[in-house]
Amino acid sequence: MEFVCNFPFFCIVLSMATGVISSVLKPKAAKALSVILVSLSCICSFLVLGYTIKTGSSFTYMMGHFPAPFGNEIRAGILEGVMASFFSVIMLLSLLGGEKYLKVDIEEPKQNLYFVLVDLLLSSLLALVYTNDLFTAYVFVEINTIAAGGLIMIRSNGHSMLASMKYMIMSLLGSGLLLIGISLQYDLTGHLLMENIQTAIAGLAKTGEYAVPLTVIIGLISVGIAIKSALFPFHAWLSDAYGFSTASSAAILSSLVSKAYIFLLIKIVYRVIGTEVFWNSKITNVFFVLGVAGMLFGSISAMKEHDMRKMIAFSSVAQIGYIYMGLGFGTELGVVAAVFHIMSHAATKSMLFVACRGLSEVSGDKKDFSDLKGAGFRNRIAGAAFSVGAFSMVGVPLFAGFISKLYLTSAALELMSVKMAVAVIVLAISTILNALYFVRAVISIYTPRNEHYRDASFRPGKTFCGGMVCFIGINFVLGLASYPLIIAIEQGLHMFW
Image 1 (cartoon, rainbow, N blue to C red):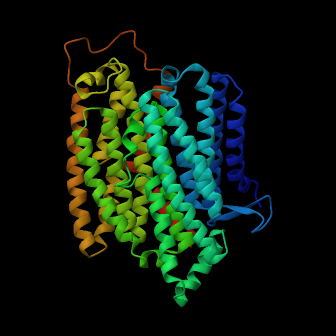
Image 2: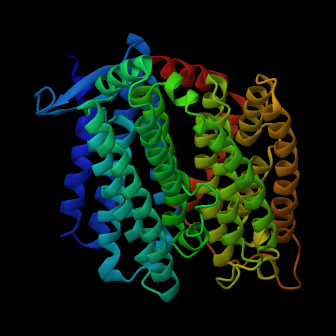
Image 3: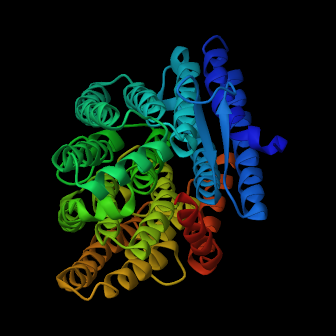
């Protein structure tokens, strides 16, 4: 085994160890250690991706070098390498972009605890990407839930405490359904490793045995993950959780946490249930209907908001709807489009939340559109980043969102059914609604006010500027050079079989 095959395991374990160490460090040291950790995770993930592309195959790593049932496995292929690299980069940029606001939003004694939560969250994200064991996936789902709840709560004001409570109630409901589904699956197949489960389920599907319990298992797992990823109508916690968190927390929660759950669902579809069995269960029709409803409801809710943070948060409901609509097509191109939209949305939404905090900083910490007038002049890098993110969400050519919507439309046109007509119409309506509220936001931040445009003493900060520039660059790369990434996603999905 090549040494690089140890990197996924190293990243997961080092993240957990760093969280423990950060708990006894001073805030500055904890921050430095976490940034180093996330940077190391970026490097290792890119090396894993390069190795899988070079070999053209996936590899497994037995944790503890014990085979099942005594040990469990990590598996890495091209798609896992892509997602781990992307998640690590987005987390690093979210931390750097929102670093200056952590000192303002979080009491000093709790600042090192913030990085403990970030480290544990990174560990769980990487584990959900790499794990080849279904129960291990559930364990890290719970770690992810607790860490995410802590990131919402850590501001310690009434809004964040209530938002965290809503998040935990809904998220634990989803976790409970997921655990029941996994338990029933284990009772049915006697396996926890993904390939072994798929082989057993394929045999059951072929003979027609336990058809009803198998359908129940698929439904429980799918609904559990849908709740945790805030699919409409399970999104009630989302606007407060994102709207009242710190800039970095909102960026990480919106771009990574819900997307890791959806990626786990895709792994379960391909590597646990099997695509043929999953498509035949008709759960894709439920995903399609709820995804389409989320696209419309999320956009309408965003249009009604006067608070820019909550507008961005409700936009996430619509964007998650796009992803589930792609999964609901029940085709490979639909899944490819959904995976690309996971990445497009992650890169864009995290940039929007951090940029919004930068615009608020130069507007008396206000968030209403009327108070943000002229903010794009007062904080130019935040204004530029917000504009790029807004145009991407609308689907303007050259930006990442355009490619997402193009592939979703292409996947819809493959269907030649009622789904095709509904998907194309709703995509068009949703795009118009996106334009209405995001263009309104851009116009607002560039509407001049009577006061001076720029405070000469204001400095946005080097890490903020660096993070925004990198986010803008990623958005243009996804919009202008998406083809290699699409090919990598397709190859990675083929490795799942």
